[in-house]
Image (cartoon, rainbow, N blue to C red):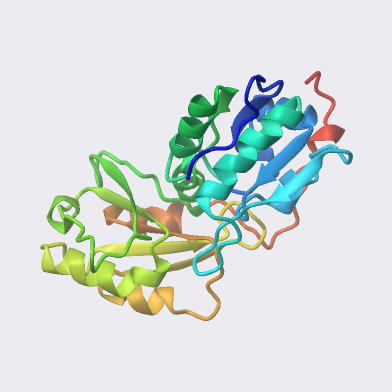
Length: 273
């Protein structure tokens, strides 16, 4: 798709590519908060929490461009064009993404379009879903006694037509975090076990991490597809596979059903932001 720009004119606005973090409003960075407060238009994903959207100025234009498996509301090409178009007519354009925009967030693709159109931009990183989920689930992604490394992959691709190199992900004492893998849980299980990963490897699926709706589904690799099919599992959800999952019971500090005294409106904090 060829981007449409206003010939002979230069974009007056700037695009801010902002990571909103995994869900908890208090995990939003100070810089992200400042940028949101100055937004003229916000293009936001489905994974951005309501608490964070409540920080957007009431007079700012809001455009939902979120994607969910099987429920795409906007093609990537349309989002790219929207960013360019809005940059020609607005001063501060915020592209708000759940987690971090450079980790399975297609941030690089969107910036490519801005470069092509000559639009100025800045990137505000966010806490990625992997680190936020692991922290709130009591699962350290690395640990000297359990895991000497961690790998992030996406399970959203068509694994049958684009084979995954499971051999490189099947070693023991290594943590594997899988984004967007719920629909392919059976294929992921089979691929790892056939590549040599023990069927008894601990696994966790964490649903709606860092929010008051967080749920954890813990079992073995051989049960991954059954965990993913649990009717109580709600999206978004992240898979963590590896020996570190054994620590979840002892290190799980987050109690989503307990009374919370956290401030859910950053504007109410007495900080000079």
